[in-house]
Length: 455
Ligand SMILES: Cc1ncc(COP(=O)(O)O)c(C=O)c1O
Image 1: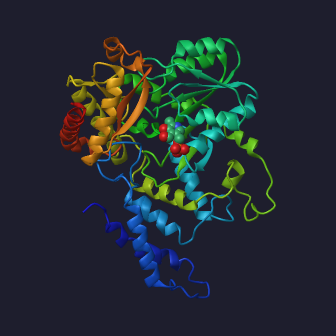
Image 2 (image 1 turned 90 degrees about the horizontal axis):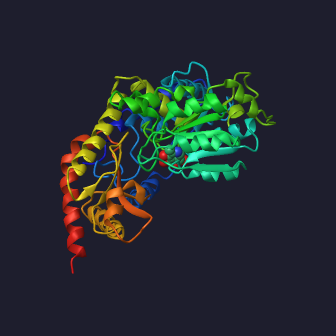
Image 3 (image 1 turned 180 degrees about the horizontal axis):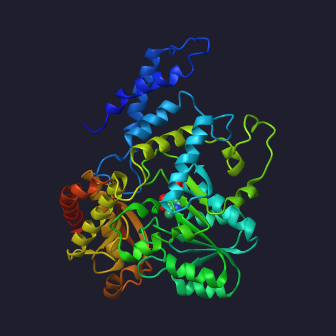
């Protein structure tokens, strides 16, 4: 059995409870038309959906993908009977209130008692809003982000029409603060994007040093913690990583994606601003909405108009079940993911066939197969990736500058600038126990790949 189906049993009771809230209305015809035809189409849907990697399974240890928590799935489904729209209180009263509560709990993870913020379709839209606000406050000035910042920042800066400065990374994939200091001295940086949990390697930009530079140069600091944000609850970070997390609250804006580590269905991102007065930058009138209440309509502080109230309902329910507290069940899940990553990295580093550039800061592991040349290592990584998939173990690949693997570069004579590496996001707590099955499968895939390369 692969799928949890017990949750389906709690849905009818919840649906009845919801329905009772509308009992005063004249009854309407409620049977779904064409049940048989719907069942047929649903069978077709199920067959079509088989064409997917098994994101729900621990043998899917590739990209940043995992299924939502069952309660998120159930709450989302329940909300679709109402289909609220969180643009305005007119379209989603309860779900807007739930969004405000859930978002305040996320802000609370970073020590913010006050803030302005909302959910979005994902990290890209959330970052876009943060950089749009930065551009309003520092018009024409550059946005600076590291070479390992998510690629969408380069795209967003074009959308918001701001110049961009890319900063180099240190050997652990973190923004080089010396390079940042040199850029800041030129006086044209308006906003620095610090990534807390880079997409490629899970590295954490050094917030203590970046904040020291902010005191000196006075730029706006945006923290992109779309992937890494929730790890602030984990009790097993290194002291250096913890020092960065403890300073996230000093940023001007933060992005965290509930649809990454927050156990939510896509799309659920979240943008937060420390200073609620930035809400005024969104000021606009709408001839259609904002009539039913003088309270804040979330559309008044968000660039998008319609947004799914169901996302807020799912997030609210998940956080009720698994509060965002240190030492709690949710935090334990993140700790297990990090333990899985540390364990995988240690076991790979102890094996002469592999090169691991540095221990993981969160739950992403990157490694390269040792080979005589850089090109040989890249080709072998590609073959291992394919061989592992044939054995149902799904990994990911990442192309990195060769500087992350000095040993490989030193041995090689082919002067390649980049190397294709294996990458694994161990974002399911079960990965910790499943390593005992993942590693032998990786071993077998390595042998398959080597046999394939022999003449
Ligand atoms: C650090 C970071 N920022 C932004 C994004 C973009 O988020 P989304 O895919 O939700 O738009 C990602 C996605 O992986 C990410 O890891």
